[in-house]
Length: 71
Image (tube, rainbow, N blue to C red; front, side, top):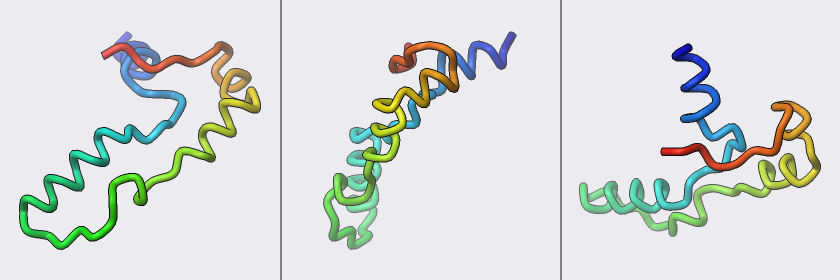
């Protein structure tokens, strides 16, 4: 039961890197004094996962269209 809730409702099975989380992490590191020179959007790329979704691979893998998990 716990696995089903976690795997189906909590985890983002689309594997998208959340841009807001990256931005917040970068800002946190800056406030701690680390010299982060790159912008958050330069540190990740969701193109691969977008291609998997667009190609229908993820739908075939999971058996249904995927949406963002409910939080």
